[in-house]
Amino acid sequence: MAPQTLFVLTVGLAALAGLAHMLGQTLLFAIVFATAPFWWPEVFGFYPAVLAYAASLVIATVTLLAGGVPAALVERFGGYREPQALPMTVWLVSVLVLTVAGLALGRA
Image (cartoon, rainbow, N blue to C red; front, side, top):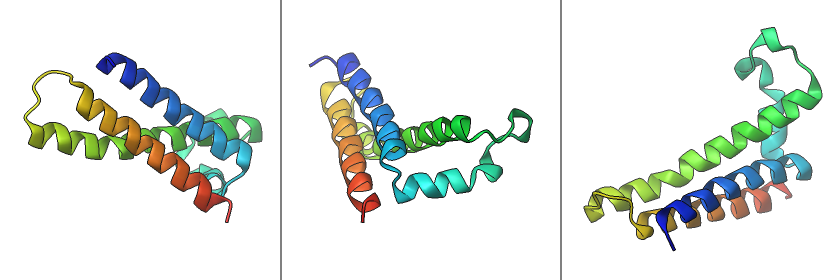
């Protein structure tokens, strides 16, 4: 599979992870939603519907960033200079593992 396709799948999976946390009302979503006064600009107001989607976006972004760490290590120590399928696959699998683990732990 092309690295670009793997990247699109990875970003899509991270976005679905954020939405799944929001729809499932997981513990992580509750924490991010409750701490909104610390990360949400006051000028936009504190509307619950907007904050719910913003919290979902925060979760998706953190999932994407945390999932990229193993991929960056593979890319660094593997000596890859151009986009390759292996680091992108590692990134996709890492995001999948974070998504499944977060949803499984959030329902407990």
